[in-house]
Image 1: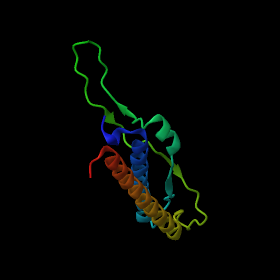
Image 2: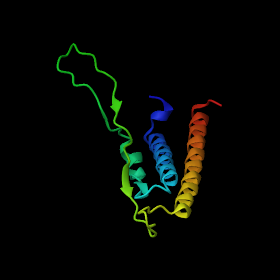
Image 3: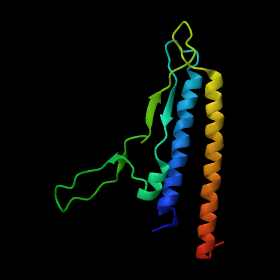
Length: 136
């Protein structure tokens, strides 16, 4: 078992993946700010405390072993484990677009700051574990 397999570090990695995926969704919202009929989307954050306690379980597809002589194949990820949700816009343009650029840019900035905070936490956690093990 490596140091990065600890449930707490797996939860931190999950949080980093969430912020990365959310950044992509928010970028799509900004890119479609002029698209007629487009409604902004966002991601619903999973319960990261539960991930730290239970461990990060990836959702994916794996082969079924019907014979003991079969070789198990690698697990194939089915994409992001985060749920997408539509965000109701306060302003809707005449063409049906409900994206507020100001709101989206505030979310992007907040997401970026959260990502940097989690990255710092991950680096410090690895540093503490290396110190405890005796590696520098």
